Image 1 (tube, rainbow, N blue to C red):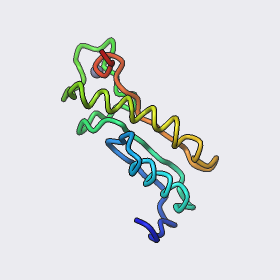
Image 2 (cartoon, rainbow, N blue to C red):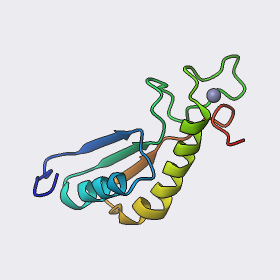
Image 3 (tube, protein in one colour):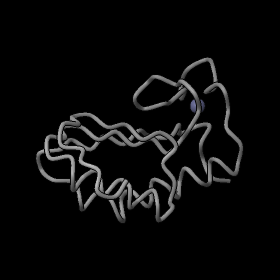
Length: 110
Ligand SMILES: [Zn+2]
């Protein structure tokens, strides 16, 4: 969205964040242009509705549902890596970066 102004956006959520150049660029673009931004939420998993912030079923009687495939799990781990490597540094002190965790039981890399 070059040239587009996001001056009045306060809360941005990106679901299914991937370690792709376009994704990182979009996120940085929002951080640079949304001057009133207060909260940026990034979620590397697109699992359609796990609402718990830490997305963990550890010590519970169920598993995360729906389960995502191995390829998506690997992509999610790469996405989190990209957030730490390319996005975290760009977040101004006025913005709260909220990165949703992966489940320690269902989203481990094998
Ligand atoms: Zn789980």
